[in-house]
Image 1: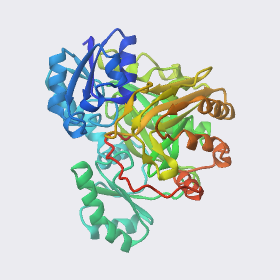
Image 2: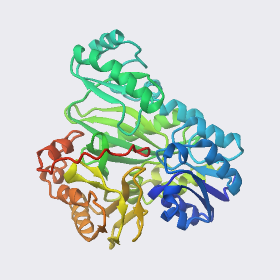
Image 3: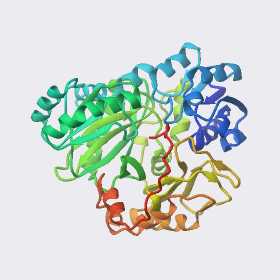
Length: 466
């Protein structure tokens, strides 16, 4: 059915991003907001605005009843969940569809299958996609885990089946460590995701995190090449680039085709991302999980392919078939994204909410910034610290690094601390310039930097990781 009015069940920069895509399609946008977000940029931009509750995410952006009432009362005929919050919640997608509305994303069945990591591994294996050696589904007991680990090889990762955003993961180097961490990992999984189930995977020491963007319409699927996401802190992505500088053309072709194969096998609808570990030593790649939503880092894929992924999500949800064949998707140049967070890297990344006094955004050729900032905006302490995504595109990687260095130099956000300075330092880091890094490299580099003593102020819970 054609979509005429779209409710955005999210906040921050992704809400602004979805509103812009809707506008270009001639669709009215409905913004929901907590009490903490009543002055947000998304609220200022939307055609219809609906308050949904107090600042706490559990009482607003995670409140399914409040969101459904807002959708019905506002006359929306579709809901876009963005990323984080309820974007990969199959029960929420079912509620939306049961109300006669369109869920802009995959079917609840696909979310349930591919959103559960152990089920996703089983599905990938059946589709012939290589997976990291691991348990056949969930492991229940400590002794079962030790037995399985003995056949996989050490070290072992204990992973929450319902995990996401790098949470619910522990590493054990031997049976004693596995025994001591198994029960704790199950308890953490229950507390974080409401699901105590865990599974095991071999831990690859020099792994790169490479992910493939796919688009599907439920009948067919295509890929939009891959992204390199190895620069992480505590398994949270800091900087991404496309394409991966580590892959040969032959490996890229095999990797992307495996992602399409898996997306087709589940009749995938909308935009999704299949995440892989690439072993720098063996040159093998292994599927690890699928994100059944739009990713934070989707702009770099848009920059190298020229495809508006959010707009295509909305078109497909409205009943249109894929508009592209695989041969239409051409990769041009290199794109880099720096996540600008309201955090102080010199104080152990302490969150830095507060009033933004001045904002100067960079521009010029090949520069894009997705943000929800404006002068006078107060960054609330309740949510994820992402303020903006600074993205550049250039003809090759050295040119993209030079352009990002220039754009970061132009960026000014006064009144709060941000990660801008960290990214500037990264642009001059020899190992980054040489593309010689893996998923543990950034933390090692940060540990070697002199820093001020960490502050004692606790960080707020972040519900919108990706």
